[in-house]
Amino acid sequence: MTSVVLLGTLDTKGAEYEFVRDRLRKLGCEVVMVDAGTLAQDRFPVDVGPDEVAAAAGFDRGALATAGDRGAAMTAMGAGAARVVARLHAEGRLDGILALGGSGGASLGSAAMRALPIGVPKLIVSTMAAGDTRPYVGESDIAMLYPVVDIAGINRVSARILGNAAAAIAGMARASRETTGPAPADSTTRPLIAATMFGVTTPCVTVARERLEELGYEVLVFHATGSGGRAMEALIRSGSIDGVLDATMTELADEIGGGVLSAGPDRLDAAGAAGVPQVVSLGALDMINFGPLETVPEPFRARNLHVHNRGVTLMRTTAEENSALGRLIAGKLNAATGPVSLFIPTGGVSMLDAPGEPFHDPAADAALFDALRAGLRSDVERVEMPVNINDASFARAMADRLHELIGAGRQTTPQPTLSGAVR
Image (cartoon, rainbow, N blue to C red; front, side, top):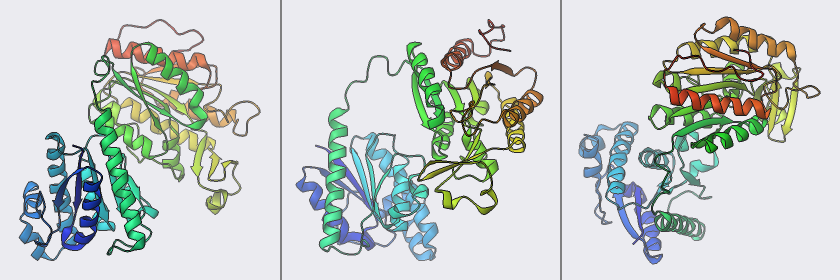
């Protein structure tokens, strides 16, 4: 039978969880109730009680309840819940998980759900779903549903929303259980590649991905929107990635230029620190990203702006910004402990950075390239090709070089010079 875990604070949301539990049972699911509330309650029978949740993280539930620090108590219970749900999943008692609540319930559910593997159905119904969901979703695959009204009793609105939530998690959990079968024969033997892509580098990464797949790799492509870069860096740190094709760097431009898609100052650090082979390029460093045109900060209004669509405005990076980016990237690549190759497309770093396009600016590009040439250690490989980054020959060259680096490890034997490339 499909098993759904209901995780929450039954000392404050008992009636709502009881309603969802009954709906799930009518839908044919086994329900595992996990109570992570700090106050004792005996109205609703549970499978895992709050004392056990607290103990899983090394805390005493009663002490947490009487300490008077709700934030610290919720953090402790979230840590315990993460261990509990991970155990339930390992025991085969968790095909999907659902949590309800406001900011506290969402934080609790998120802490637990992030302990579960990608692909396990995860759903949070929360009033926080209509705002900034990054603190709850982060780089995970958690789904959030806005309940319209507060989760405070069962009424004609909440009954419909919570009923839909029960149906959603039941359907996801059932489908996940039914479709989980033997993995493809090569799925655990193909080396795993992480790649970064943006709309303006899509042709490049598509060709490179297809070439790497021909060579026997499985490729995970991350959208370089801040959360994508953070997700990739986290996966690299987990030890799951065998090689990195980091073709798109726009998140670093946003980090130094005040854009909205920064992945933080640690972007481009994980592969180097872990010694993972990486081929890096400069995709989309011609742009800093903002939302709708009216949200662009006033000091930037006179800059070279391009309205990509109603929700996205791009700002061309200057020569000064590109010099700073070149120095930043050089420093990060110099610190790499594993094999690394930097590919420089001297014909432009995006679709918009080509002759006749709005961001074509050879002087700004030259500032980037010069800073990299000056800043890179002599033993860090640099490959220059006189084409735009989206040229198919450039994409294939990057893929082939990554294949060589993975195969050779730290081998330092000189490789054949690429056609049209300067090393």
